[in-house]
Image (cartoon, rainbow, N blue to C red):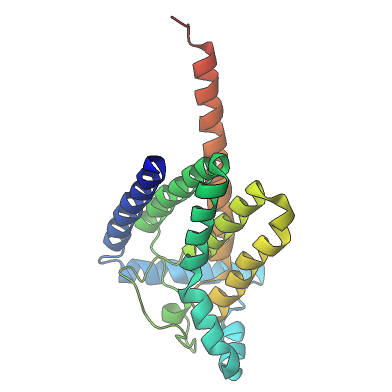
Length: 222
């Protein structure tokens, strides 16, 4: 029980620190975020990925899907938290690796938010309807998408613990990818950045664990 309480306290501290720094990254960056959004839009047009206006128009033309999309977007953290608790209680070995990967994702994302503030499509693209509504302390952190990133992390963690649940688990980020685009919250390239975020965090975690293990085994005993 003491270990569980300690892990929960560690996560709470990490997320409180992230929340504070995330808010700080969004202060006074509106003009820079708008300029970065224009660059990202030009890349998407060149790659044929600029689907955000059409996707948003589709959702506004089908109002029956609007409320489910809003709930999916706002309540995603419930499933992410459930995965954390499930791993902590049932798969503690996987939990440690997943928690380290999550913390690394937080750290890397903060670096990007401070260096590349990004206006979301709902601010930067004409005609986009702000489905979910402007929320949060930092409205200029669209790149990468942490909604999509956390859903990817949850699927990755479930897959690591129970590969047989992989198909069900990966449906979560697929749904989130659709939701964040149709609601005007993220660009397609934000999602690509989220995939890279998870890949880099997982790679750094594996490398550091390997280095630590090698150091421990090579250290003289006694």
